[in-house]
Length: 306
Image (cartoon, rainbow, N blue to C red; front, side, top):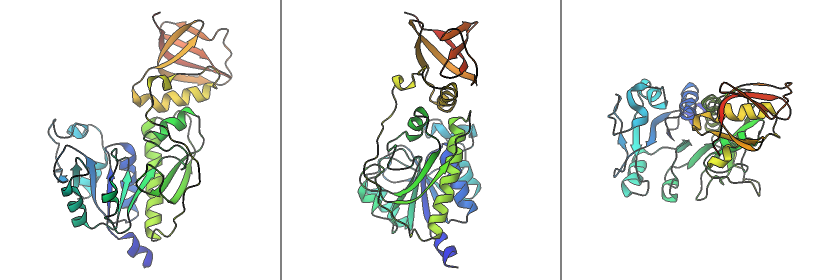
C-alpha cells in the first residue's frame, strides 16, 4: 500500500518530442505513476500555456505538425493528460504556475533548456533528470553521441537530482543497456527511455529513498562539431558501422582521409568483420568499401574535391 501511495504522488514530466520522452512517459503510465502533465519547450510566453489536442499551426510548434511522427504529445493526449509549452524559464509566471501545479516532483527527460535554481526548489521532492550515461561520465547535452563515438558498451541511464550545475546532482538509480549492432539513434533513445522510465517509476515507488553523491571526476562534452563525425581507419568495421548507423539522424556527413585524399561518406550500408581489402578505399559507382581494422564497411559516398 505504501508503494502505491508513493507512486500515486503527482509528478510533471518535462521533455521533448523525441523518442526518449515518449518511451519514458509510456513506462511511467504503465507503472501507474500519477503523471499530471507534459511540459515542452515553446515560444516566449509569460507562463506555460496548454497545447490543445489537435494539430497545431505551423508557426506554433513545428515539430508536432500534422501527426507526422508519433511522440509523447500524442501519447499524453490519448491518455487525457494536458500538454503545456513554456518559454523563458526565469519569468515570474513560470514559477507561479509550477507552484500552483504542486507536483511532488518533476521528472526531466530530454528537456533542452537549463532550469533555474529558483524552479528547482519548488517541488517538494525536487527535479530529477534522466541522463543517458553512467554519471559522472559523459556529462553534457549530447551524451549518447560521445558514447557512440567512443564505442562505449554497455550504454547507461542515470536518474539523478538536478542542482545548480549541469549533471552533477546526487544519484537515485542507474542501469545499463547492451547496444545492439546496427541500432539507429531513435531506436537507442526508445530503449534508453524505456529503461529510464522504469528506473524512475521504481524510485518513485520506493519514496526516492536512495540518494548517492556522484563520484569525483567524471567528464563533460559539449555539442559535437563537424570534425567529430570523422572516421578513423584504426577503428574496427563494427565500430565504424555502428557509429554511422546510430548518428545518422544528425544529418552530418562522415569524413575520412585515405589514399592521399579526403572522402565524404553519406551513409553506411553494412559491415563485414572478416573482409580484407587491397586498398584503404575501393570505390565503384558511388559505393565505397572502406578498410578498417579489422573488417570493412560498405557505404554511399564520394571522393571530396581538392
